[in-house]
Amino acid sequence: MALLGALLLVAAVVLFILLPVARGQHASLTREDDEMTEAEARRRVTLLALRDVEYDYHTGKLDEADYMALRKELSAEALAALRAFEGEEGATDVDIEAEIAAVKAGLAAGTTCGACGHRNPDGSRFCAACGQALAAREATPSS
Image (cartoon, rainbow, N blue to C red; front, side, top):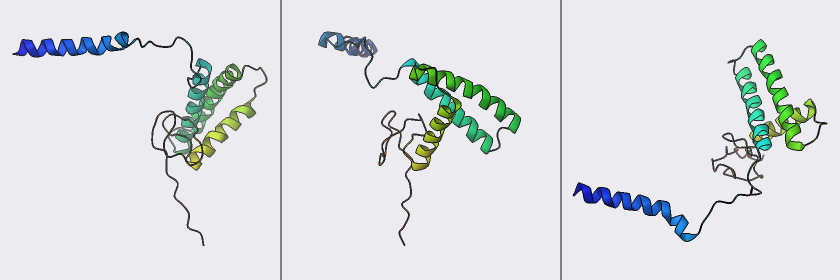
């Protein structure tokens, strides 16, 4: 009986693996428009790291010396990532600060995903990138 169960399990696994091949499905070799490029992913990771350093400093997990050192290092990485992403050599620290301010504003508005950092349109309840529920903003009563 155990042998029959094992054979059925093996047959189900083989069928599961071969079904896409039998249907003629294949993975695309070209990049889709909604996929991130390597430069885009690098930019997002460095900006999220900068955000995390800000949080750690403001919550007291980092002292000022460590904060300044990490911020300097991550700002340089973010600048390089922004240059690669935008493909131009004119990016400055102002661009990095503007991007950080945009992420902070999105977090305050509840439109930036806290899990992956994706900025969503106003009124979104879930992240379009990862599906995580966005932080719901409390409606303020009008007087």
